[in-house]
Length: 254
Image (tube, rainbow, N blue to C red; front, side):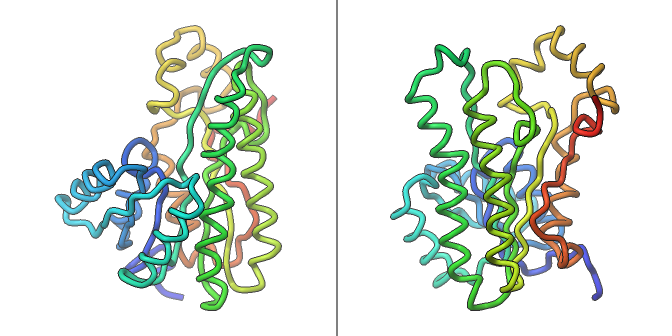
């Protein structure tokens, strides 16, 4: 097995890839040779992100569809498979966050979180897997969270959704590994992103974070790229059903 970490000519679909961690992963995997399909809800955002990657000499195309709409997902995946080529790797990155005390959490916010963070992982993975199974190859990488294992004030529905992602990863592994499909997850610790901006700007939270994390700092989103490349490449051919924590040691400490 040569070039274990090469992604040359691999078609990689990344949901929620027009900005933030999704866009960084898109760029990082493209730099390893992947042909990236940039998903966003709107065609404008998907095209803008794909154009940015192409301006850097990378291979990318827009793939706009609503990950929570099963009919839109089915139509988009069918179109990709017919017009662009076989999806080799799926990265379920799309996610949202809402913050409220548990007793005041609006039901609509709960529904929105579960739809994007949990239901969409099921819908998109199922649709892509139906193509991967007869080919007897493929990789699915789900983006979990520290909250796949730990609770925290004001984000109970988010934690519930990411706990579900952990178990979807394990369940899909059990059912798909026999077809040479590897299903794994990445659980980021605390990284400075749009989603965590309010926390990053809170000195008290940063003080707690640096004390709680053995690495004693926030994560740089660029530090997630290596884990994604590993799980998307041949190097992880016998790794299945795992949740890889990229958290500066937080999950190992008490």
